Image (cartoon, rainbow, N blue to C red):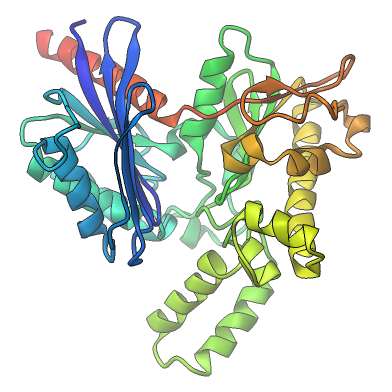
Length: 410
């Protein structure tokens, strides 16, 4: 295969991450990476780094909308606006998408019709899908002739067991596509990829960040995961409830209904409460950032302590559940911003799990970044492994490009 420059676009609820890779036979070289963060604020961040991590630009523009944010990304990729940034002619573009809904389950080439189909299921990832859809449409318009591919987080979780995927709801709603899809699939897939060729049989991976989830993986395939129909379910996250008694949501909805007149308006407000005002932020009343909460705990903030205790307690419970589901555990992996960098969270999560075969070494745990942190003799190995989502997107794009080339010759 000839060298293929691949642009990766990874959009979040308030950010757009991008990277350019040079993909060749078995080689993947990152040429540059960048982020437009703080979308929806007047204090955004926009930076680009080269292959060795040197910042080529670092700005703090107002980014009131996704359009302004993506306009900066476009200018960087097209050249001229940022003279220090050199981008090769793109050969393909890969997009991260949380879920394509019940009808789009495979990674594939993007067409306008495919975008329309995925847009039908915006409610399945309401904080992520709208901006992803917008960027896909813009990429097709701005880079005509360059093939675009969607890479789904839900793709990795397509192997979860039916009893985990099916929600305990009437069939009429299940028929609408309401089921467990999971998220962070590209992160989990990248952990399995990095563990090759010795992927443990019984693997639990905790992706802990502002969005947090955990997955049970059997022989490299997802069998269960904490997030459900949307990323709001599962673990407590930075601003999301995680799993919660439906009666709580009904109570809040009725209270909202006392102020809101329309059903849609009330539902939108409930969504804001459950997905943007809850979680670590809601309990602490302070912040959704674990670093802020750890500082507050040192100052004696009881609400910050409660929020963090709830977070680590919930992760611990899910680990126990997945050990039962897998029949044991051979390896536990921490990944994501909190998983990689928060020493205290890892220690608090693993405390008391000796009976499950998980024994942490306090000294080894004093690291940030990739490491083995389990104690000598621990039945299960505990590791910290940074995710490589962009790399997985590049790998999928290369595979799909190859499939198209083979198909065109047949």
